Length: 341
Ligand code: NAD
Image (cartoon, rainbow, N blue to C red; front, side, top):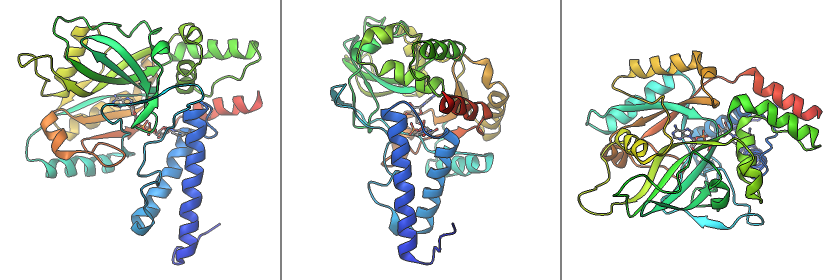
C-alpha cells in the first residue's frame, strides 16, 4: 500500500523493509547462486531505496545496501581471503539522460580531456587473480569487496586463465580482475543434464557460472565450460623502474593481451558522448551476437590519473558507470520454468 512519507516512522519502516528485502535477494544470488527474483526486479528495489535516501538523507547508514558491495563469504566451504586492493560494484544509469548527467559530472570534475573506454558488461561472476612474479598464486570471489572466497583450485581448472604470465618482466605483484562466465549456447545443455541427475537447474547463465565455480570439488568446476575475460587491475607493484604501471586502462588491456590473458575483443576507446551512445545502441541491438550474456555497457575513464582524481564512493568508482539495458523477457521465463521444476 501507499506509505505516508511525511511520517518519519513510516518512512523509516519502509527503508528497513526495502533494505531487508535487498539483503535477502543478495543472499539468494551471491551465497546460494539461486536468485528469487529477476535482476530487473532487484534493480527496481535498489532504485526505490536510492530514491528514498535521496529524498530523506537522514535514512542513509553505513550498512545500507546503497553503501555496500553486495556479496558474502561462505566460510563453511571456502577460506576467506583479503583482497590487496578493494573490489567495487558499479553505479548504474538506465537511459541516455542519466548517462549525460554522469558524463557532465566527470567532465566538470576534471579539466583533462580524458577519453572513455567502452566495453560490454559481462553478466558473470567477478573474480580476482593474484599474480606474484608472473605466477598465479591465488584466486578469489569478490565477497563483500574486502574479503572474498578462496577459489584458487577451482580457477586453475579454467583453460583461459594462464598459470604463468607470458612475459620476462612481470610486475612483482598485481591483482587482475575479471568476469568468469558460462557460454550462453552451453547453458540449456547443462540444465538438461542437471535435471536428468535430479538436481535443480540454474536460473540463468550468470548463476550457472557462479554455481559452477563455487564448488567444494574442483573436479566439478573442471567439467563445466567456464571462460573468463579480464577488465581491471589493482595493487600493481612494478618489478623495476624500467617496467612501470601503464598510464591508461586501454594500455593495460593491450599488456594483458601480450601476457596471454583473455581480453574482450569488443572494447573501444571513444572521445564523445555521441560516440558512447552509438556504441550502447549498437550492442543493444547485437547483444545476442556475443558468446556471453551482456547486461549493459561499462563506460570507464581511460586515463588512470583522472580515475585517481575522481576516486571512489564506499560502493563504486566515480570514474565509471554501467549503462543497464532494459530487461529481456527470457530471464523471467527461465525463472518461471525453474519454479515449476
Ligand atoms: P553490477 O553487476 O551492476 O556491477 C559491478 C560488477 O560488474 C563488477 O563486480 C564487475 O565484476 C562486473 N563487470 C562486468 N563486466 C565488466 C566490465 N567490462 N568492466 C568492469 N566491471 C564489469 O553490480 P553488483 O553489485 O555486482 O550486482 C548488482 C547486480 O547484480 C544487480 O543490478 C542485479 O542485476 C544483480 N543482482 C541480482 C539479484 C537478484 O536477486 N536477481 C541479487 C543481487 C544482484
